[in-house]
Amino acid sequence: MVTVGSVWHVIPDGLHEAENVLAEKAKAIVLLVRLAPGDLKIQEGREDWSYDGIVAYSKVCTHVGCPVALYEQQTHHLLCPCHQSTFDVADGAKVVFGPAKRALPQLPIMVDDEGYLAARDDFHEAVGPSTWERERPIRGEDY
Image (cartoon, rainbow, N blue to C red; front, top):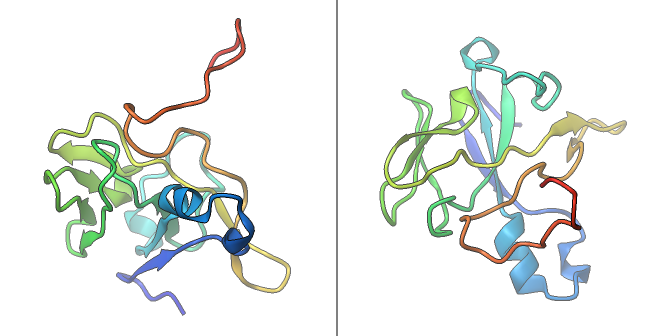
């Protein structure tokens, strides 16, 4: 049970089957955080990305890729211990302090037919810092 104020570190089911497990695991680590539903500022277009106050964000800092893991329950802030970038979980994991330039990517979640929390889809934006290698879009396509 995920209680209000708790944080869970999770990785996707079946990850051990990936070709390069360590590289995939490094990008796939996720934090589940449960807030009181009234504390969440739901981002436009993400109305169905959370469940009963539970949100999921990449654990990979958007500054240089350190694992974000320090949670301050009263402020709903996640802190990266490497360079102190701070993200507001209640407000789309937006940066509130530090050198990170963008919010932590959110993972859309749902409850499946068996009652388990599950990813609704993959991240809709790149995980990790902007300096990490990214697939280039096909000419004429946007990111």
